[in-house]
Image (tube, rainbow, N blue to C red; front, side, top):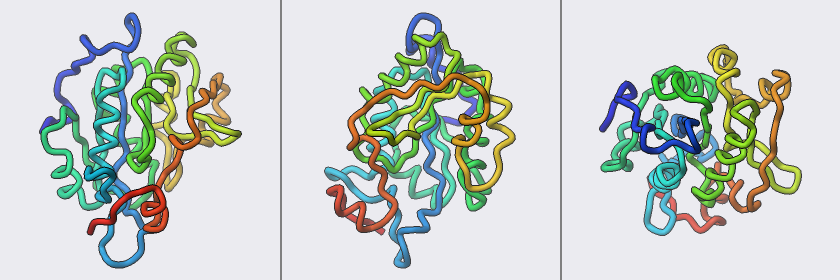
Length: 219
């Protein structure tokens, strides 16, 4: 298991030219909508693979220089499900305070600090593909690393998204159970929406959603 301060391997995995993308995979949340009984959405299995591992594998196949996973709730089980993958790890001990804390934790890593852009991805999206992520990265490179690039489908947009270096300090000031949506809308930074398959934007927050998406619940 690698620590978040491990050397970058971006020298051989640059997105395009000299552009370096750090990918942050958010997997720290309490999964509060899963209800009682100890069920965790990220440990649910899709095609026999825990969702968090599937998401990490998708992230690793994308054209990012590094993949850092932010853990929190039940982090020992989450990291066990990721055994053997070439990931950087960082733990957010204040995961109960909400998503902002996990984003800040990820952005404080060496990988994010050195990157031209940071691709933020939730780990609860069972249909996202590395091709979807590469489309976002390519659009970010085409924009000369000076835009927010976010996934969109039929008027819906959001995560995953690539944030430019210019927003780094603003992200570090985020607080509470919020992502970067308000920051993106008010920063004045150009925003590019990249169309992807609507199914790729599916996230699963409840037992019903997991079963409907073809997953198998695991405690």
